[in-house]
Amino acid sequence: MRLGVVASRLAATLAVLVAAMALLFALTLAIPGDPAAAMLGPRATPEATASITRQMGLDQPVPIRLWRFAGLLATGDFGTDIVSGRPIRDMVFEVLPFTLALAGTAIGLALALGFPAGIHAATHPGRISDRLLALVSVAFVAVPNFVVAIGLLLVFSLRLRWLPVQGAGETDDLLDQVRHLALPALAIGLGWIGYIARLVRASLLEVLGQPYIRTARAFGIGGFRLTWKLALRNAAIPTLAALGVGFGRLLGGAVFAEIIFARPGLGTLIFQAIRARNYPVVQAGVFVTVLLFVATNLVVDALFLWLDPRLRAEAERL
Amino acid sequence: MSALGEIRAGASGRLGAVLVLAVLGYGLLGPWLSPWDPAGIMVPDRFAGPSWSHPFGTDQLGRDLATRGAYATRLALGLAIATVTVALAGGVGLGVACAFAPSRVARSILIGFDVLAAFPSLILALAIIAAFGPGLDRLVPIIAASLLPHFGRVARAQALGFRGSAFVEAERALGAGTARILFRHVLPNMLGPLVVLVSMDLPVVVTLEAGLSFLGLGVPPPLASLGTLLNDGYANLGRSPGPVLAAGGVLVVLTLGFTLLGEALRDAIDPRLRSLP
Image (tube, rainbow over all chains, first blue to last red; front, side, top):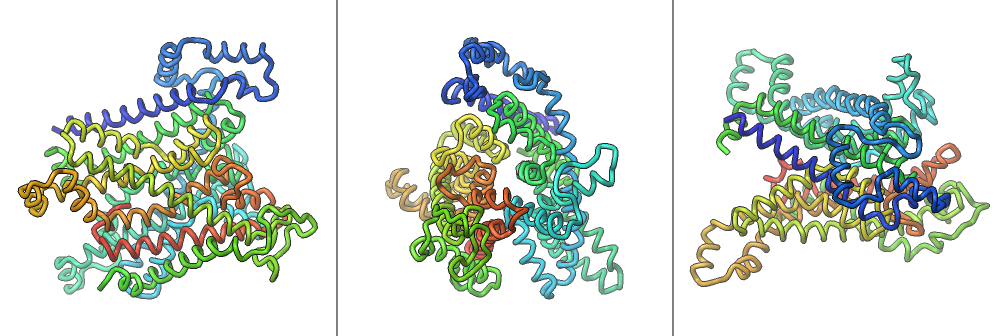
């Protein structure tokens, strides 16, 4: 019956994508006034407005527009950008790697720092370092990532001048790119460091209290490597779950980090398109972000079923 | 031990309560105590550092940051309460309906929750604001919609638990109608977990609102939001870090205070909710 579980997850994913598409389309109908005129702003002449209206297909009846829109999104061809004349797909795929690199680095940082911190806290419960970590990790989760981003920018780029202020770095210079990636990734990863540390601490404390571990320790087995192995095995699933659910928040954080550090990326693309009232580009950017998000959720769900046999049994019973 | 006593016993809950009280006092009393007009421009005094007359300094137009921050805090708190109230009402309504409705209706409500929860909320907000432009009348429903599934699921789970319970069965046997059971028994018993959710979601709303306002897509001018103040400071970061530190500092105290207090409240009222991210 595993196929049934997979099928229902796929159906839910599809439902989200269809809902996203419907919403994005409905919004074009709801734009107050004439979208073409809104895009042109004060430069709008009747001829230019009419031309853009025709180019965007806004003179067609609504069902035909919906059909075309669905077709565009389904084929991954987002049409042509009226402003630059370039295919919107190229604009999106050009910046996508930057956003993926940023999100990936943030998660990597969070794992690399959150796991040791959580293990330390669990193996030294009640110590000052544990209690401090508890407070700091809540602070990391609570403080808005754009405040963190601006703070990092202020301290490390403007005051200390250790790291660059903006951009993504030279395309052929890996070290330069890493230097440009460091602060934005830390800004959006910081909340996750705290979150993962807390998850690891809680799941590790739970196992460390089990009788078999105490017995093993009494016989002198265990120590550092055992703790790490236990932490990895027991915290992997909740961490994975948190990352799956939180990926949307991570992408939201990426929007701020990209804008604050003036990095190219999906967030910057969407933001600039909103500013320019270039709605087709907004639609494409938002749709790809939603796609990325539901795809991650699907992968996490699949990993989940594969990692945890108990869950697999439960899913099959449903 | 009572819930309040437990919060007072924990260090982080105590810190949270102090921060929340400080921020409430600042937002409620600040505009009233301050001698300055939040929009009063005094260009010669721009980028002034902290002083007795300007405790947080001034911004790029010489406006008093402590006063602007107080008005912005008041706005942030008001918006957060309004938004969470809308989400709470909608979520509890749909969640309880889901528990008591026939299974076909219940399933479609649940699918609706899933779809809504599957949207990255900030990106969704960006798409909607791109179409309609910024404004308070869309900010509240957009953010409320993103929180609604959370409330809905908890309300449903709670109501489901009560539906089969002995005291509800007894009420029914005594001839009570569904409405009476709902309002007299189910809703009052759901209060604890919902209070926890409300307190945990307040800082989330404050963050989303400030974030959208930082991008210029949230609270429209001339209202000043903490996000607007932060953006003003960010634009002038090269000239003075003061405005960013003032606006960022208020935001940090606000979100950290409510989060710490919310977590202490959760541990005191309903430790089972601890598993919720």
